[in-house]
Amino acid sequence: MSKTSTKGIWKVISASSMGTMIEWYDFYIFGSLAVVISTKFFPSDNPTAAFLSTLATFAAGFVVRPFGALFFGRLGDIIGRKYTFMATLLLMGGSTFLIGCIPSYETIGFLAPLLVLILRLLQGLALGGEYGGAATYVAEHAPVGEKGYWTSWIQTTATVGLFISLMVILATKNILSNEDFDSWGWRVPFWVSIVMVGVSYLIRKNMDESPVFAKAKKEGTTSANPLKESFGNRYNLKFVLLALFGATMGQGVVWYTGQFYAMSFMKTVMNVDSSQVDELLGIALLIGTPFFIFFGWLSDKVGRKYIMMFGMLLAILSYRSIYQEMYNTTSLNQKTEIAENLKETSEIKADGSRIITIQKKYTDGTTALEKKTYIPKKELQTSISITINSSDKWMLIFLVFIQVIFVTMVYGPIAAFLVEMFPTKIRYTSMSLPYHVGNGIFGGLLPAISTYFVIHAKAAGKEDFYLDGLWYPIIIAGICFVIGMVYIENKNKTTHL
Image 1 (tube, one colour):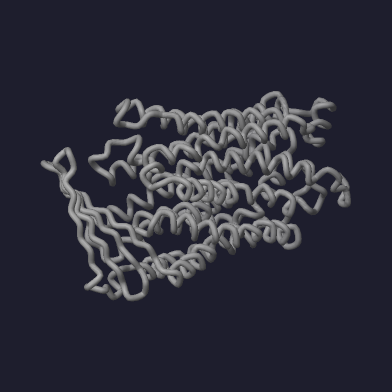
Image 2 (image 1 turned 120 degrees about the vertical axis):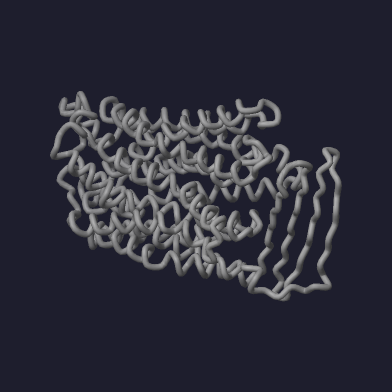
């Protein structure tokens, strides 16, 4: 494609981005509602175990993403990009809708978490095939020398999908009462997905096949066995491993730390009100998202390597300071309580449990709602929800925004970096596997692993227990940074495109 030819590229970008955004929305609705879901599909007698089980189920969708990359990547390199990611769209949409239809644990027992797990696995398989297809499709339409810029639009879809999931949840919460949302309203964001999927399917149905792949197919140069050529060929396997351990592994943990772990940390460790977290995270994502485009464009000018590596380095060096400041911003130990405003109420439920609710106010406008539940013959359950003031909210928005900038630096150029590493006939398969291992395994397991580290450190009595979860992304990104700096060349290989 000539450097000046951009005819039809916006149609390609719009169709690819919309479908990919919806798939990310579907995938992240589960994570955005993890706190609520843990009370619906898992036993309620141990909230901590239920939440960890929910995170583990969430992570299961990431673990199978590489298998989806292999299965759908092979199809994409044999039959084409277009039809493959139409199939992934329908699989993802159907699975998401059905999660919203599963009865609760109280209704069907252990069948509930089992069904959720199965549908999460199907979601993971679908996403494993979606991203590689969309990134490859756009890159093969993009003009030479501008692939970083055009593929960076696909890079925004993960963050936009998360942002839209938060906005749909907030809108649903605002329309319904707290009781209705907790009872059935949390299912609405899952149901909404089916409408968006239907619209996106109709758009994608009218798209043409990638011109690069269509040319290869016409000339008979496509691969008959993409898996063997991708991973059985030592030369190509070397680039697959380099892409994984020198780029996507670190990119994955930076992405999930800056967005999902930040959200989980504020809700479960800092105990900030769930709706406030969704709101401030949404604002930070909205402000930060244009930087995906900026760093994708910049990578066309200066190369992919140094932008991605610098983003990893900044994250490694600053995570502990950022999360220390986040925790201190809302810590009640550093605020002055207005003692005369303390309110305490008590309620006895039909099952004999007793709930004591304590409302506290602080001089800076912060309020805290603490609930202590005494259940006969069971352990005391305590929960707290902190409503932060405007100043603290904007401080948290700023601290999350900084993390989003790290995300845009490592993620903005990654699609162009990956597609340029592999030839057309095995590109879908070859780039999808390292991407989804890096993001699905190393990145996707981060919320569960880091949350476990925090809970374990807290149980051990560590004073700065809340920082222990950061060792995982720091170590993984650190290893990736060293490998990437040593072995990745800072030039854009466009000979295959």
